[in-house]
Length: 140
Image (cartoon, rainbow, N blue to C red):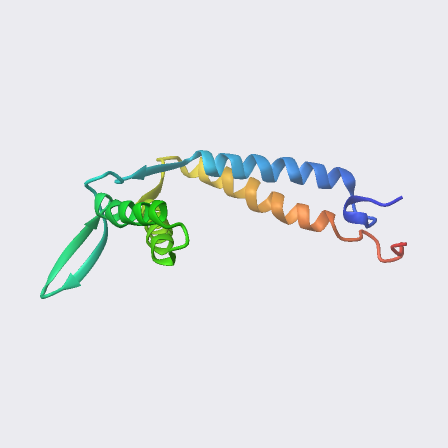
């Protein structure tokens, strides 16, 4: 009979490690706080020119988007309009992602050790359960 992953490995070990790994990664992701400084007046990008630093805000990114949409509605085959619209949306998405800040909530050392043991230990057991237990039993 084949076990986990089509080998003669342990099915029980597979499911135990899967539960450990999922529980550890859930606790890890649950302990992360996400904040952002995104808004229509927030600076997304900084450009250095003429001896100074100038900020490009999210509202400024919408200006080429509006021109691009106007050009597309006037002539849908105009490549420049498509480049303006798609480029502005891409810049907006990258700006939003770049403004995200991740931080851990405060926790005790015991909480962190439990999270790490469940996550990494479960991952190690999960990968071990996919191997053959005994070399005397060939995989068929």
